[in-house]
Length: 622
Image 1 (cartoon, rainbow, N blue to C red):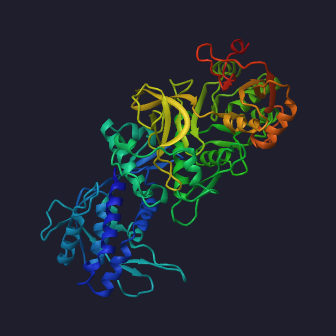
Image 2: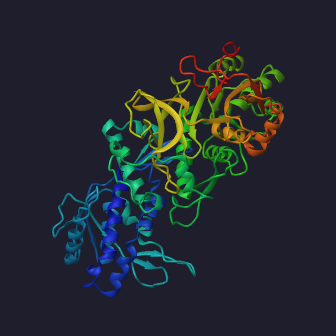
Image 3: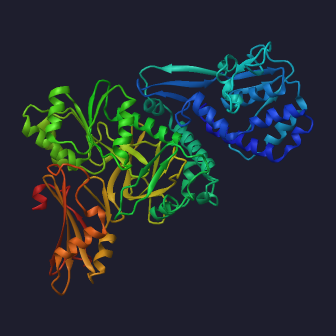
């Protein structure tokens, strides 16, 4: 069942073919044709897998977040099927072949099946549909009989019985079959005690990993091929051919996402959760997740939290941002709720006094948040209670200066101090665990696949710097395929069978303030251009709990810098203080400073548009 998604694609293609060419039904009775047409539903088939077998993205493993263990689902092997009805034969063949078995059929309807086999042989799919017709099953091959399905109100008739509530639709037949004893022998279940989903994936050989990612690409393109945005793109079959697809820019994603467009939406009924993208100058964009997309993201993130160092019994203070449809607190609280840990979801309005109280009352040992908030929060908690200690610090949203981490480790006895790397639109990209530190992160290739590309979208060799492109295998509503997230990095040599990303910062002039506010250099320049200012430089610095964005400008005549500050804050909401964070922990201000001449590069003469001093040591800033 390693590549069950390829079999879903093949059956979907076969269903489409049979729906478009209905001559197969001519020799059948009206009842037989009606029963078989009801089975030709690719959407229902996929939901059967998701509901009855487990998350399609985790298969062949079923993942249990609470114990961090997996059960592997394997096909029985060779099976021979029998049924008293044609509909029973079709149900049996579909389920047995879908679950990876080699299927033989002792059929009383051979002309029908010969036609189906001939039509299936014409399909241009990666996984060929194979079915053998037999009259004498081999002694070594298990024979499975598929019973009829019967409504519970029908008396005196043997078979699989089900009920339908008044006004409800009849269930998809294969969903009922997977609840019945006849289908159980098709799947062999092997539980792996003490083996996590990450470990099970790591145990695959390099070829198996490559084949697994190739199957993910094929399924992603199958799911997105009907979206208006992706109808005319190439259909590569392997990750090695991924570069054939166009780069998705932020502008294109914005145009196809609400409230500006729906070109990247499926026609499925609304479900799941909608998040808001980090505001860039007040321009709001939404990130819809379907129910299945959302659950996949949460389960993969739980695995990441285990990998980064959380264990059963941890007592976790969650200080991530929440409310107003932001995802940090919402997603993390759902993830922690699936784990054997105790969570204290305080959010961004936590105070040092509250943190000390939680430490003294509950002996909390772990905290999650953004660096700009946690740095001051932890330092002030230590000042309030000299006995205050914290064992684990997990952070994201920004880099944390190494010299500050070293100081906090010494001050608080921190044993685990690691980062989760995530994209605003695509969730988790990578994580740290020993021996990684600084800007190196293990990639989570089974969720977000990272490419490093040049300015034209062409892949660069491992070790070379380039733009980070993100392909999310598990998000089909408003999908991200080769999405240029605006960061640069490089892939460094593999360790323990996994790829490692060295994250090198922004490539598009985006500035992150206080861990989540987003603003572009060009937006500041556009506002100030209305005042006739053409040359400017942005400098971001941090002192204690206060971050300052200084806008240095060149102008031949004196300017009212206070008025310019007010204009910037009026035009760009990201430059306003607030966010419900205690002012003693996080503060922000913008200053406009007029200078005679901006600093220029000694050779090129170019102005360095953005200088970020937050990650420099104090002596370097001085």
